[in-house]
Length: 194
Image (cartoon, rainbow, N blue to C red; front, side, top):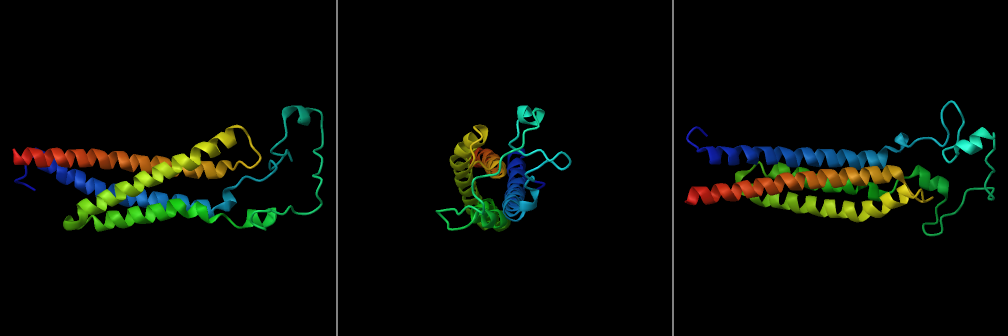
């Protein structure tokens, strides 16, 4: 590294950073996915801890000391599509919550493989492609769900929206760094040829 020009040092340094960025992005995405799947204890309870105020209560209903009416059904409702009750659905998380973990695992493996100089270019391009797919998937899934949350639709899941947008931000952040690195590497190769 002592005899390298400034451009080559920058490319060498950028390559080391990209290895670490792929590994770090992969670990972050895996944590997002695993917390999304196993972290159901983070979900807020239906009532406030000390006040017994239901989540859907308005200020007017609390002022009038109105009591929320029980639902018309006496037992758990059946989800027609999956054949599970609402209670079962609350206990078992959706396997789609693991999507960020799978994307993160691929990026982590690409970051580890890219430590080998012979496979660095291919591994970083695969990691960038996976980040692009993860970012696009996050946009496709995140925008409609965000609209549901903003409109306070009954089927909206704000927790899922948060995890989707975290995945999208991490994927696009890594993709931005990868594109900058690819451009710098190309310029460095062109400068060394001239």
